[in-house]
Image (cartoon, rainbow, N blue to C red; front, side, top):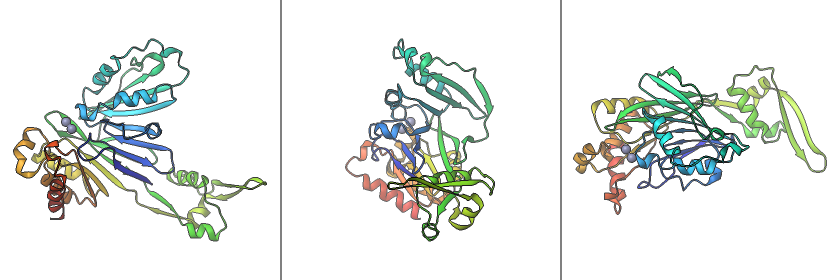
Length: 332
Ligand SMILES: [Zn+2]
Ligand SMILES: [Zn+2]
């Protein structure tokens, strides 16, 4: 279960924060201005997917680094060709002579994505962020990362430079039937998170699940029930949700095909709507989508909901025009 939302308003720097409700973790699409995310939220982030390194998508890297410094954090970052060098350029702007005394373990696992391969490098705070791992090459088939809980795929779009669009797919959703839980006299609590994890990891049915709760004066109480029994009684598994993040792309036949394919049947599609269709020539010059194009692509992809962003400042007083144009095209 998660919440996904734009970090800034439609005119602000692009970026989507996806927060996993019970896991104390989050992922982020794009690294623009992050000041709307407080440090507590930033410190939950495990994965960051950067579309490209234009300033409005990458300026937040320094702020993130600042917040994470001195903490035990490992963050995986993904970005387009040239990403390692650009990240190293940012890091090398600072002086790191005292970090070897830091006791904590802060590290960046950075994957540069190319059309046919992924290249990994590791940067540790304690070694002044000098790339310390041999580069690892891996073939790239569209999937960037996969865990027990989600998969993220990436597709290259043309923005005069390669720009990555992303699709996040939640694995199955494990829902708890609260009424049955109550009937069985079982408490709600953290043990349910463990139960969900065990189901998503595919653990065998005879796995004992510890159910525990606190009682006033009598302390912690516990009981054990098999995973199989809980699956049959209190659990309902439904398909996971899909989110797509599309920004900074020119409208071309090839981009349109890739966007429709990537965003197919998304539960929520975040898509840029930078210009009005009457300014389509400007959109083409700047390699961005118009609101009409965004709405049309969303409809053709069968997206269930859309969220629009990256509005040009040209429409500062009239954002509703962009929204209305996109929604008209989306609704057909
Ligand atoms: Zn751009
Ligand atoms: Zn941009």
